[in-house]
Image 1 (cartoon, rainbow over the protein chains, first blue to last red):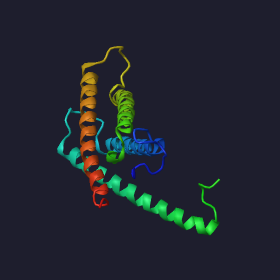
Image 2 (cartoon, rainbow over the protein chains, first blue to last red):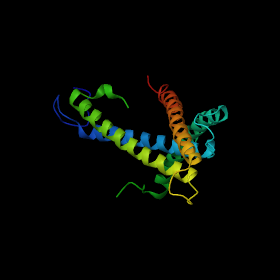
Image 3 (cartoon, one colour):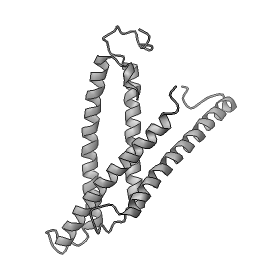
Image 4 (cartoon, one colour):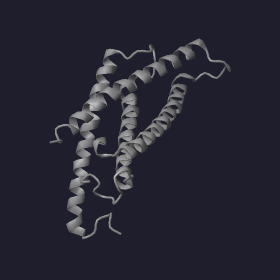
Length: 98
Length: 89
């Protein structure tokens, strides 16, 4: 059973560690999505609410807003990874070790 | 999020967890939307009842937000698939 790497559960059992990781991933993605909805709404949609449909300008703004958010997400992720990699040899202790 | 590695017991559990999260998310979005539309549209408290202007504003607000959320969802799914796709062998 090569797919049950982390746990020692038998074939119909439940591997809690991997499920925890999957659940964490889902939570993270949901959080990012909710933030994008909130941010792009504040930036792109005027609060006059003259009509119930998105006009062309708002639609284009939303597309660009989501794309930019992903870019920023990626760049910040890279920066944090570099910062983590640089910090550990320098200080000898990372923030995750207890 | 690759579910092909989970066996059926795990998949059943994951499905339940995801359903619960979706319900919680929906309720959160609902109260967030109510607050948002109230804050934007209802600023005149000379009367207890909603004026027709305020009511129309709230309708438009809710409509717009839902369409906005849908569009963000579409773009999000596209970009997410794109950023995860090339990484897989």
